[in-house]
Image: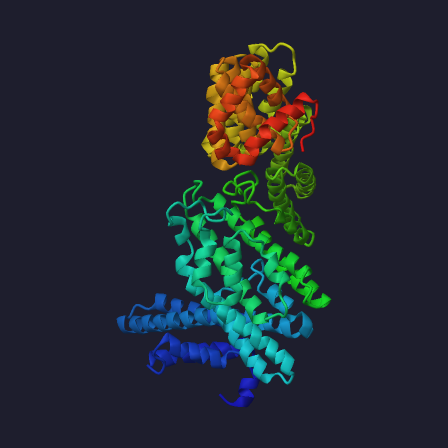
Length: 634
């Protein structure tokens, strides 16, 4: 076909001829493999014409199929079959070309965004390009191709600083993937080490960080992991920076992302239990988001850096924290209730969770923000920061209503109800729980209903206890609510809610002067609350066990539990410590001061195991404070 004739044809017509020639060449043996056809496509297809080629391919395929269906002659049928096989080779090559083109196109567009950005802001542009919340996500193949594009582009830039910057990005991406390859074999091995707890708990157990620090070669991640193993805030690393090695920070961003994703994939595949269940994905996301939040805080205080660099790198780290949180909030198994931090001890869940509040202010997606605020509110409540928790839950509640996320709305009503329980605002707790029960049943939210029933039953028990006399009939409705909540929680394997139901049932039986029933339920609640690390429920369990054993006239056990309840409630800033202190004063009167002191000394080792020497020594001070009328909680 002459050039003049070719120019008069449309692109679609030219591609029809092109497809026909490829089929003919395959049939004639001139093109022997899919790879050969792929090279022809790569050399011949014009940019931006993929959709037109797709239509020409479909049209020719339709013609070949119609020709095959019409043949009755064996020889002609064989030739038609050969043409269909050739079309299959061409389609496979086209599919491969599309995949590779899309990857290359994504990388090219990402590079263009970086080049269009001012040089001093290109690191932040890189972080935005690699955001895992964007589509398509930069997978390993993308990163490898992107790295090569960065290198090639750097060679063409006349600006030395710009070229150096792109090379630093490329070096960091390469090292990040290599560092992950080095650690991949140790991704979850720490879970199987002897005497290990689930690895993000900041205690003296080995955890993942020390193993990773031992295996990694790059200085920055090695320093970070070593610090995490010692329960040190990542802020110190950023704060001590005297100059910035961009390649090292790019490497760290890639490495942490791959470690996080690898852990999440592994935890997602495990059965739900306290060792490595689905709830551990939440711990993983928040742990990595916390690291970036701490690094951001550290950069803000890095006195050896310029003001511009301090703010710039703080912003980059916050952006990475935000990206992690947004990925977390988009998941189907996003946990709206307790359990996310079940494996963190109260002491080790650091105050620095507050750092995560700042990037949330940038979040565009209201539903995601509502869900993240829900988790952070729960976290604050677990640390005893109830005022902050209420503010977070109220904002989350408002946002959830705004977007019609009723599961999130129900969860925040339940969290607010539970905080009201802790603060002894039983009327408010009852009101919030009633609304949550109604909404949960309307929406078929069984977990929401279970939590609401527990809160409702507990608040009803406590309101009934305010009466001078309590009858079994008056406790019937609260007990029914709690028993239904407990059974539903057991089916859902919601340990925290089960613990609350058991403790509340025990409290009801104490009020009814049925101490044996109370003891059974409270000990069940204590066991589970210790298992999940809920300090509030542990404190209440001990406090009411003190009352139950007093009713049973087992005064030594009553002394032990009442003292623990008093101390733990005071530590949790709950005024309920005064009730345990009042019981202790009664016990002192029954036992005599000398006998009471002897019981404390006999149980000294048991006390120290739970509250330490300082806690044990503090018990007499609390008793004296109560006697003197000092009802402060701190």
